[in-house]
Length: 427
Image 1 (cartoon, rainbow, N blue to C red):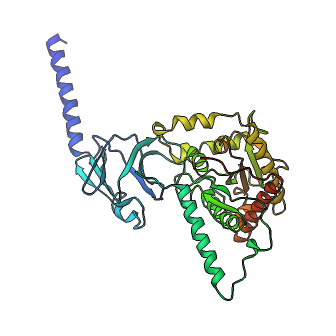
Image 2: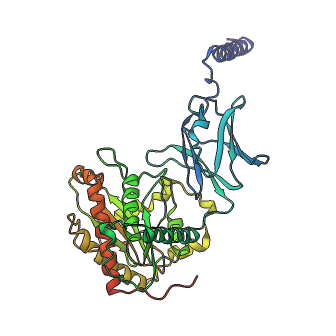
Image 3: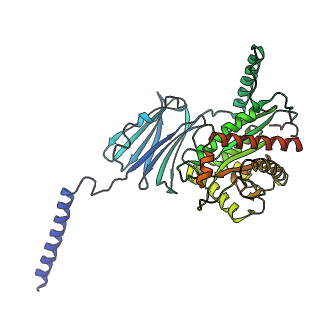
């Protein structure tokens, strides 16, 4: 074939190819030419500490953000996103009792761009960041709004104590005086010479469900329920008061849990969990403390690794981490505190062994990040195996939760009898 004819043939073929591609674009379904990212779910987690809005999507997302006043609003634009039914009715997901957000709405700002507008109840410090896929979650864009003046747990504790004293005055003036509950027997003497504060830490929460039972129970709900009962029992003890790291369903980073305990000068730190294993026959309760030299068993090491991944699942803005606190958490020169933690762990383990089989007959050691307060005796209690169907039923039982809480309180009381608390710490 002559070179000119060959060239014309090639050009004709290229023209046909381009024409075919153009025709395909004209008749292709909407979105075929430039596939749009897809919003999978939107979840809202309100709390006094902060409110989190999580937007889960199928692929990495490009976004921009800014704030405006009159009223205060946070605006986030999502690129290459179409407005779908997942984003419809977004305003209905905001509770009227949300401490931080008044209104959240979404709309098609321009082709391929969805605009989210969050109207705020007060001035906030917003943090907007992305999370890579992990576990059951895909890509996530996180909108955290923190109040400019965060709630002070120490002031809240003082307020609660004042309210309790007012209640006691009202009871003293009432006739006839009602009989106190069994957990607050007036005949039991105080075992401590001053008011002691115990930080109770319900594990997981919010985006982080923790372990999931074979019957569908979430560890985060079990731990919160047990911790609330435990708080009521501790508050009923002479000279004892308890504070929760969270009192609703929201995520608290591991460092923040430790930070809260230190802010209220806590005397003890008790983290509540529900264990899980791949086999359904694993059973029993356990108590763990921080290890200086490594885990006491491969199972303890695995559990610590799993619990320390809570920040990855729950979602932490690593760019906003406090470097001073991070250094504190990495400081393992805590010989005295770990010794006290061991005594506390033994006391609690002995009591919970009266209500449930023990997974191991000793206090175990592992590198749990949540136990790394350098000056607070700290334990982690695995109340039972949520992966065991029988123990999962127990964990959902009010009777078992009460027994577990009573056993922990009894262990704490016995610990203080043998280890009287020192003079109050100075802030």
